Length: 254
Image (cartoon, rainbow, N blue to C red):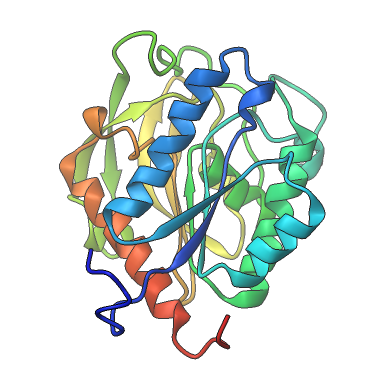
């Protein structure tokens, strides 16, 4: 990526990446490595990631939200079912403070009209924050945790006439690290499903995107784990960062 000081026409978008607080995980070092994978995905395509977790004080959050050109909601623990009007029926490792952080970041992204990419939990968060719901547990769907064995894989089919379909093949084999899911009936009214997979409980949604022109995409798989992702997913990273770069135009000077 060229240095902006020598090539002023090249914009490095600032992308807030909401992540798990490593100090609250059983293995903080592994959590840091997971978080860094998301940052690497942004950097590979010329973005400037700003990692933000629930321990960040209010002033840091406000500054991050006020200057972000895009938002990446990353993977992690389950969302509190109370956010979609249900009791706990299979959810685990709930982190209300992270839910609060990400709900605030979603609201800020909506106000600022910036692109949003959601990965795994982030995909589910987009759906919940937009008014949808989740299936709290899919027995037998979750593979080994990252770093503990080879990734579980399954096929997905992608809607060709969608934003995601313009980037990915109509069929792909993706990793699965999740035990919750979005069923077709769970999708928020403002979103559309753009990829699907079979599961022990029937067909589940593997990707959603916004109905308007703003880049809002969520994927259930983990494309930041390039070793178990089809190479075409680099197009998703590139499209997201480019959308963030384009969102800089017309915004006040920082």
